[in-house]
Amino acid sequence: MIADDPTARRRRWHWRTLDNAAGGLALDLGLYAVSATFAAITAVTSTLLPHRAWGAVAAVGYLLATLTVTAQLLLRRRSPTSRLTGLPARWTVTGLAWAATTLLPLAWQSIDRAGGRTDRAQEEVLVVEQAGNRLLEHGTPYLGPDAIAALPPGEQLMGYTPYQPGMAMFGLPRALLDTWWTDSRVWFAIGTALALALAVAALRGTRATAGQPTTTAATHQRDAALLRGVQAATVLPVCALTLATGGDDLPVLALCLLALAFAATDRPGRAGLAVGLAGALKLFAWPVALVLIIWGLTRRAGTRVAAGAIGLPVAALLPALLVDRDALTENVLRFPLGHGLVTSPAQSPFPGYLIASTLPAGRLIAAALLVAAGVAIAVRLARRPPRTAVAATLICGYGLLAAIALMPSTRFGYLLYPLALLTWAPALHRPAHTPATPLPDVWPGRSTSA
Image 1 (cartoon, one colour):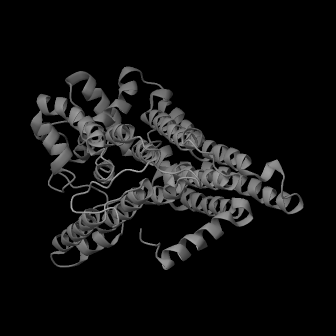
Image 2: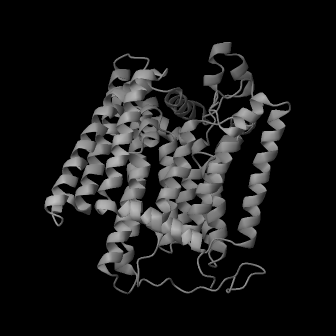
Image 3: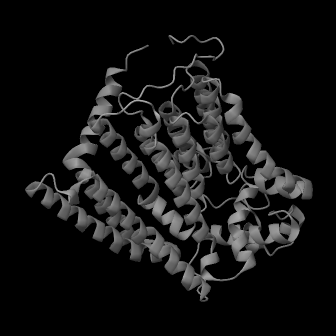
């Protein structure tokens, strides 16, 4: 077994020192204070009206969380062992912060929208609900190229559904009943909360099923890392804003985190099912599925992971393929690749977009860089396949970060994937004195000493 790189150990030590400062409250304070500033700036400066509405409500929620953590820090100085400053209290503040900065503005905007306001949802919400209505009426969530071309030029973009067929399920409630709680964001939030709750339960259940007791310090460290991971997927502004105004990425992210939690607790079949559900919603989950399949191969469980990770997306695609193959191709392949009747409006100023828009043959250069990054990750997976859920999560996080940076058309909001994944990784470490089940390395051409 190769020892950890000293530089990597130092990085982990510095992060752990920062994360544990004042029992975790120092970083909590920074998170909520910076988030309050971001929400306030969004409320004043954003050109998107749903974002401005979110910022006006969320800024107050983040401010209240900031004041609460400030009070906890002052109390901790006087009484370091107070229950009001411990980990359970931090979980409570996180839950209340998520309710105030995500669920409250989400419900408010949904109710306003049901009352006739047209500036209370991003276009993604309308697209998903239209997809649900088409699925109910025609058996496919997609419009064909001829139907899209027949729309007025200003409406052609809204005719596209650039998601996998499973995403239309979140639009079905609205197709059945027009009221505030059938808004697709409400169901995005329910799906996200359910997946995260299952992930937390799976990781916390490790102690009871591992066969050996863990130390109190190890248990506390694991739970603290888990809280930080949940914060990244809920109250982090890029996640809170996305769920309250658009929302389609959050259930995909939460299912990926659930899949990695199952991987960390040696449940490869369930990991495959969870990431397969995510892949049936959106393409962003497919790289995570690939990495998990490779992780499964190192544990003689590749087939069990692949059955769900590949089977569920294929099962979701098959009905749409049979009903209208051209419509599926136009929405799922041509439009995301930039060959649809209209182009994607995703144009955040990341390196890939700047290269594509400013340099001669820029799109080719950006595409070449993206392919090169993909090849580098593939070589890494082939030479050093991930044998732990932590390694798989880090590869997914850094890989998606590189892809988002280099894609010619991308959005700032997509950063929620790598940020949440990289923050989730520490929560997947096994507690001390909880041995992993020894399994032989079956990766072709590799030995267990690698």
